[in-house]
Amino acid sequence: GGGGKGKRWHHDGRRLKKLNSVHDYIACATFLMDKEIVHPNKLAGWGYSAGGLLIASAINIQPDLLRAAVLK
Image 1 (tube, helix red, strand yellow):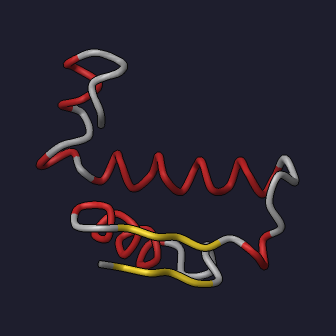
Image 2: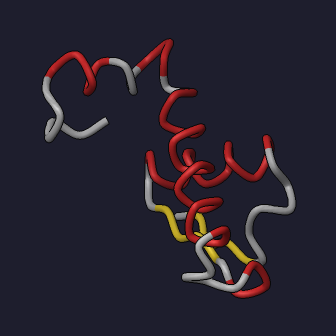
Image 3: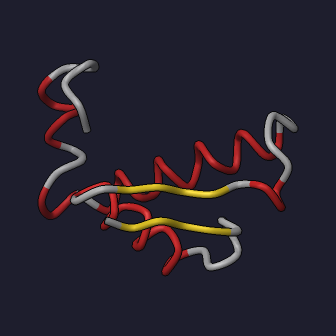
């Protein structure tokens, strides 16, 4: 949750609702594959700090989502 869609949207991606961000990430990755923008065998993730937590959480929920990940 960045602030681009308002405070409520931002807060719906924080703290106890952080899982919403993970589901958004998975939905975006799935969209890219479904629309054939990226081949499923070539999708990788990179995350730093909270972004690393996001990527790791997505991998835990859907282990076959990414082919590679860099977590910092």
